Image (tube, rainbow, N blue to C red; front, side, top):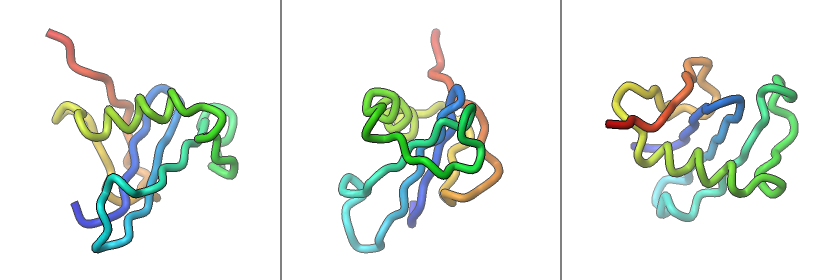
Length: 85
């Protein structure tokens, strides 16, 4: 991973921009409700911290069948779901 990241899941999209040379854990994530804000104009991360936490967890532990973008503005996002046995 060299930079920006993003993930989409169940109508929410989380994205972050990374400054090279800083720890990834220090990145600030933004959250968008793509069902009501298709232009991604309103960051709702502070209003929905639990939803953001779910997407962050999915980013770090997503199955290989889930597309995770390393370009925050990619149009190739696909829904991710935890795999179950």
